[in-house]
Image 1: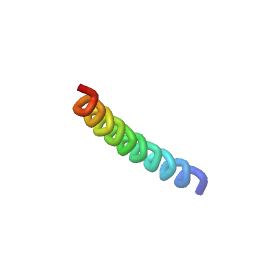
Image 2: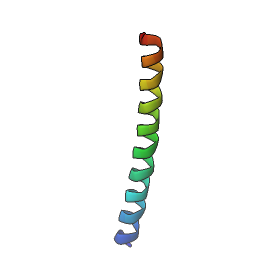
Image 3: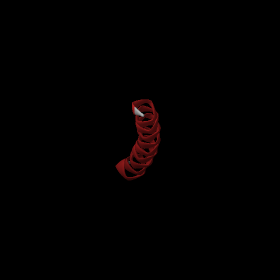
Image 4: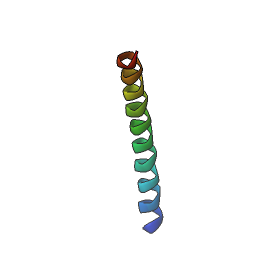
Length: 36
């Protein structure tokens, strides 16, 4: 039981990291465009 919960939490963490990196990249791009 705890093994399944651990696997699900790892999957959620990976998806969150991907979304966060995508957001960070987009935000960085916007900053570059408006920063010049």
